[in-house]
Length: 156
View 1 (cartoon, rainbow, N blue to C red):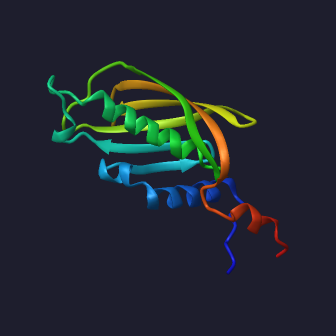
View 2: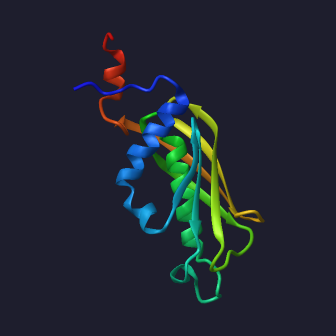
View 3: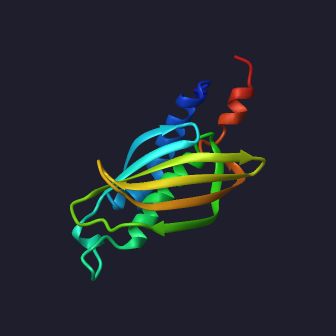
């Protein structure tokens, strides 16, 4: 069985995102969507539902964190190397409310050796920034799409 090997970094990022999404039940359950993906970047969206609102009638910060963390995961795994978070920090800047659609845009700032740094901006779609998240990544053993590296090393 031959595994098709994307040679273009954009095609690889898209294939990895598709593979991750097929197993990402947490993000799916929260109503997230992948809006854009690229090498070292990802944008995910999530509608703020009634069951995501806290006692102050605003989006619970944990849901904003989860959206940012998911965008971070898609960005730092976009090269098909299994990568996990080693540290994360979030600053909440403004509230989001039920009915808002949040968008988290992740951008790679540094990738060297096994570590990386990513900045994620969470905005209300078409509006204000509600949170800033910084994630530090650590590459572990394996691939998101298992066997892809070996398949790319085989002669055609």
